[in-house]
Amino acid sequence: MLNFTGSREAAGIPQPAVGDTITVVQSSRTIDESATLVSADELAATLVSDVTGVGPGTALFDKATAIQAAVTAGDTSTACAGITDFLGLVNAQTGKKLTMAQAGQLTTDGDNLAAALGC
Image (cartoon, rainbow, N blue to C red; front, top):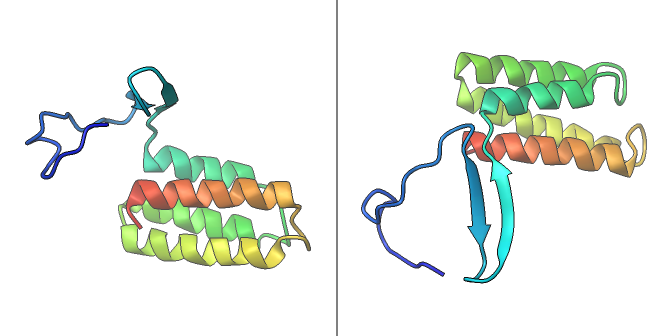
């Protein structure tokens, strides 16, 4: 494992960009995980798509589209606040209007978007 103190640039490690594939290596012999980086806009679109027609009325959909609008406008603080509200509603509806599987997917979507935005 590479340990260093300082910036990625100082260590000669390039910053990955949207669309890059990154690989996380646990040891010299084991590749743990590989993923393609996606933009916050793409993650917001996934959230809206996954919530369409799900849950109580249109509350989740309305929150997801508001989050997407904030992401598109570059309003990170509003998007992050919206994600917090969205996840709270998902939690409140889990086992009621949302199955565990639905809640798990929507929570993952919200968490991924929050991470991409740096919430």
